[in-house]
Image (cartoon, rainbow, N blue to C red; front, side, top):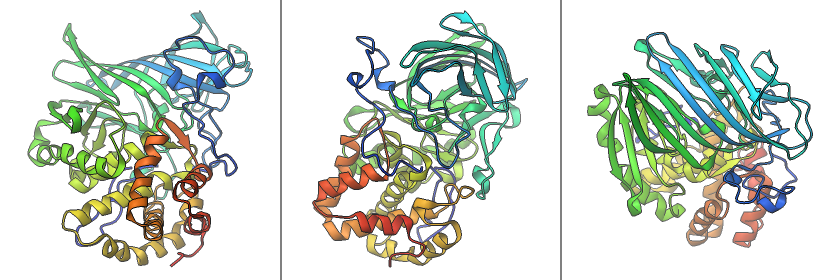
Length: 479
């Protein structure tokens, strides 16, 4: 996820923060469900990849709404740096997962609603805190396009976390009107109306209009810009489903650099002129890092990749990772790119399973250091065992971390050590076959511990349940 948390080893390993009480009984994917599993979906549905079965979060139940399933967000956003004002229109295609008398979305109280419609008809809206309710009924599996027009000066939300760098989430405004928005576990509601939970992934079309000389960067595939009347509009498209925490907004005077990854995958780098000397050289290592990851994880799961260099933070935002200049190192780029397999294309169903993202990304960051002169993987793993024990004691086991301790280092190091134990037990050939098969077989789905454990037991032919549970739930480290 974001900033470095600890400096470990001679390689100064960075731990960016990135993202669970999943149902412990379900072992089936709950996103990217087939159209056959829903009641009479439309034929040739353009948003079929956006179908989900959202759930309530056991840690942060105030965010997300299981009674609706957003299929697609069409966002038309305007950013005016001089007044720090965001204007927006959100056209949201959604279905009701059950009959509802109203539609509730997460939406920041700092932004004023200028009008709203459901299925083209004006509706009454009410606000309570960061909830927006549109008073229109929907039948079970009924669909509608919800449109909300709004404007205002966005404000961050206080996540009330011990970890200082993720305490204020969402839309940040900096000197000169520069702006960026990152959010994990929640916070996208600070800049657009959203079902703000990872179990409800959706497709996106985003247009960001800024003054000429500025750029508007979002997640997904860059579709180009148009310029008219002193303004430029940058367009972005996601045709693979995106969890709301993996979205990004960035407005700044970026320079655009283009590159190509394995098999010609288009890559774009968005860097402010003053940051180019420090960051472009690292950014241009992205194709080589992607190639290194593909040997261990299979083909990169999206049509494009990119990096946007903001003034702070770091995050595996989908198809466009976000890193501040202090965190632009090859190891951190490898960590955030690894999330595209573990977190982006396979997403935790709830925030209890954050370990599913961070354990894998941390493990492959460590493996990257090992393969590039940082020591052997065994040495690196041994060097973090003592620290892991202290983290577990302070913040709780990684599968049962404390509510106010989101994305602390316990969800990185314990699960990484668990993966190393699995590797030692099943051997390198089977382990790396597993790390390639898991994301490829579960593309565009959400998963939980139960589904992962069942799958890995079946795949390896080993019963790893006790090993996994002891690492994720134990009050003390297994060894």
